[in-house]
Amino acid sequence: MKRFAISAEPFEIAPLRQRLLADQAGAYASFEGWVRDHNEGQAVRGLFYESYRELAEAEGERILDEALQRFDISAAACVHRTGELAVGDLAVWVGASAAHRGPAFEACRWIIDEVKSRVPIWKREKYAEGEQSWLHPEN
Amino acid sequence: MKRFAISAEPFEIAPLRQRLLADQAGAYASFEGWVRDHNEGQAVRGLFYESYRELAEAEGERILDEALQRFDISAAACVHRTGELAVGDLAVWVGASAAHRGPAFEACRWIIDEVKSRVPIWKREKYAEGEQSWLHPEN
Amino acid sequence: MSITVLYFASLRDAAGRDSEQLPLPASLRGLYDELRARHGFSLPAERLRVAVDGSFAAWDSPVHEGSEVAFIPPVSGG
Amino acid sequence: MSITVLYFASLRDAAGRDSEQLPLPASLRGLYDELRARHGFSLPAERLRVAVDGSFAAWDSPVHEGSEVAFIPPVSGG
Image (cartoon, rainbow over all chains, first blue to last red; front, side, top):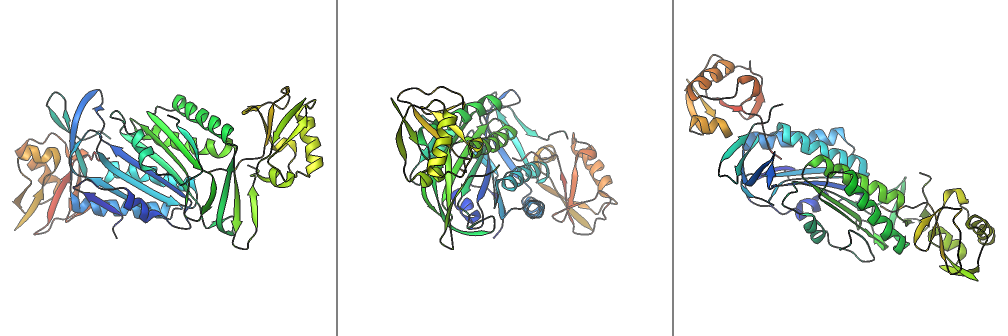
């Protein structure tokens, strides 16, 4: 079972969370990224995520492998949407389970940070004024 | 609507999470504490949580008020179970939403830490050997 | 002239009851020490907090007729 | 002797296509600079990563007949 997935359709969190439950795990930390109605002062109507899917899935799996090495966690997973998203839609989900809450939080935070900086997914924002632009952050 | 609750019965996370969704919020961090099958080397069959409910709810609200002051978040909530719980049962849930992921994670972590150290709830563990004991941590 | 004392967790087990009515004490600290001796509580007052009428209170807070007093052992939620 | 170049995000918009077949280049860096001039890409090579056959690669990696090359603009998932 893949732990990192790109999903072109809306996805349910409940079954993903369920797979992280384990009798030895007492702690579960999760993160969800939703489409906000603004970014850097501009009103946003929605956005479009594009990925280089093959590379994104390979890099995502690598991040989760690294998280399992770096942190004392039981399991971790991540799903990232692609396609057209409206304000309020779920864009990304990360979950991590562990015996203790410290590593669960730290791994969850580290995974989303790495996904945002390393996985080939690009966001095009659609502004209320009708313009669009790809985000290619500096750094 | 109370943001902190003591629940004597199992509770659903989905409606609690739903209340934290907001168009200006792009980030949601959550924590769940589940009953583990062990603690400090002992096999655990289940546990019993007792609270001083009136004081617990007041102190829990105070923690959430403080979190809203300390962190740049949109909303936060917490529910803690009481009563008999089996291994794998949900004991506590915390959720926080924010425009950005940093404050969402930090507030979520701070809230669960404060709840564990300040809210009058006590855990009695039932060990596989049949003994029970109240946990009154030295911190 | 009486107050209600509430017991939780290990204090309740040791006292064998949830609560009891007691005469108005001179101080919270004196009350706890007396109850500790009577019920055999293992925890010293230094490891407890005290609540009066549903709010945390200082150990030197006054106690009034009719107050509800609770001694709060170290908590273990989460 | 040819390779496939994949375009994503702003590079795809500027190139007006998802991919194209090109002759085997001498180097990845030279290939990007040539494509940047041809398609008017705004991003300099220093801001991109490069992937060959579905894995990130160094800019001085060799390119082989039939390789699939992708220039990866700064990512913005999450």
